Amino acid sequence: MTAEATPLRTLSARRVRLSRFGLLATAFAVSACGLVYELALITLGAYLVGNTAKQASIVLSVMVFAMGIGALAAKPLRRWPALSFAAVELALALLGGFSVMLLYAAFAWTTLYSLPLVAVAAAIGLLIGAEIPLLMELLQRIREQAAGAAVADLNAADYLGGLIGGLAFPFVLLPFFGQVQGALLVGAVNAVAGVLLVFLLFREDLSKLSKQLLAIAAVASAVLLVAAFAYTDRFETNARQALYAAPIVYTEDSVYQQIVITESALPFGEQDMRLYLNGDLQFSSVDEYRYHEALVHPAMDGPRANVLVLGGGDGLAVREILRYPDVESVTLVDLDEAVTDLGREFDDLVALNEGAMNDPRVRVVNEDAFTWLRGENGVWDAIIVDMPDPDATETAKLYSIEFYGLATDHLNATGRMVVQSGSPYFAPQTFWTINATLEAAEHEPTPYWVSVPSFGDWGFHLVQADGEAPLLSLDTSVGPFRSLTPEVLEAAQVFPPDRAEMDMEPSTLMHPVILDRVESEWKNY
Image (cartoon, rainbow, N blue to C red):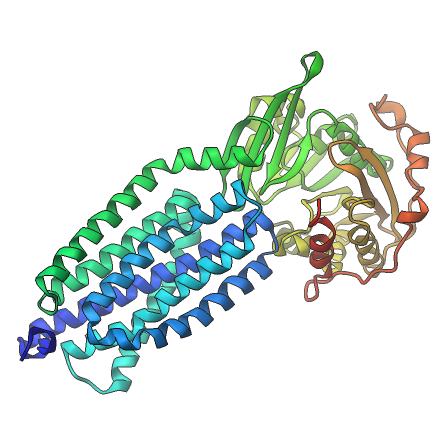
């Protein structure tokens, strides 16, 4: 009888129990790794191109399909289960570990992303699919048992590993290591788990040449992963800079998004500072006042002692609010603490927002606005909704009938609420979808727009608590404003024939049509 066919059950019962535990622990570890790769690809896509639901659908469907193909393809490999399993794990360690880096590079330096994403997801799925058949064969070599019992053991280890991987990604890997280093670290776990299992429990199944080749492959994989881990910071810096024309002066991957600030010199010594969240421009210091004056001041011509700002963590809307001496308090709710910290601590941004975020009248809440509103009992005289564009599942709910209804419940009977609504020129369907959604939330909105050169034409909707259409007006006592006058605001309500009001379907939590509108209209810009 050859070593390949010798079952470990001929060893002591204690050795068999330890071997079985080691194999199931390996199944647990590689399952956790596999789920992390899935989550990493989904999250990367959400960061880079938005629409989390679509990214999740692409990654999961492709990977699950490929896993089925991989399970079938593993049948011939059952003749050499130990060597095949080690080879699969090393391949998975490299492909999964480098997956985020490869896709980020494709996005930064080429016009491709979707095709490489599908290819990487399919390849990872093929390798993951081959794991369970090979582990099943190895488990049977340790101790013969009924097929149902063996499947139950492996599935239990697989599902428990998935739980740990699913929790480790958002709570450990992403916040402490980031996407690129997190994936590389998990790749190392994959490699160690596969190689240790084979060398510790199944080395008798390998020929001398196989052992040597496997050892060389393991060392080479380790060198590549360690080198890539050490190179991560430089790689990310170069890749990010490739996406932006101006020099990057600050970057951070928060729990929720990628934050980038660029600065460049303009003629006559002026500096252009720009803030990007997940690649989307939030403001340019050259003309942001045009946006923030139009956003804030029409809503402030009325009761304004207590103001609620939803979004706007950079503090620029708060700056405009604090121009009114009768404002007693401002509550700002922004999900990402990293952004509000910038508004309070990043010197150039503090200078731009005139220290508004450090004013004692300002209270900052770092929570999801939708969830926070549901648990909040307070009411405000004015509400400023300064949310990012609804190009992701997470932000689409903030442009729904339900959200606008919640916000209105916190508005005083004589209060006003304004909503930033995107571009009526570049994205007219999106703009008028917001109009329809506010109408479905029992408002009669007043739409208006202004020119913001770094954005293009940009629009807003003003509503008031009684459901009637509010009149656009300004309290010029706190002026003069840099871009607004009563005459400009009057003209801002006129829309040209090619951007006239459109009859659109409102967006809801269960049917976020605004996601499709944003994606279809902005994809060519």
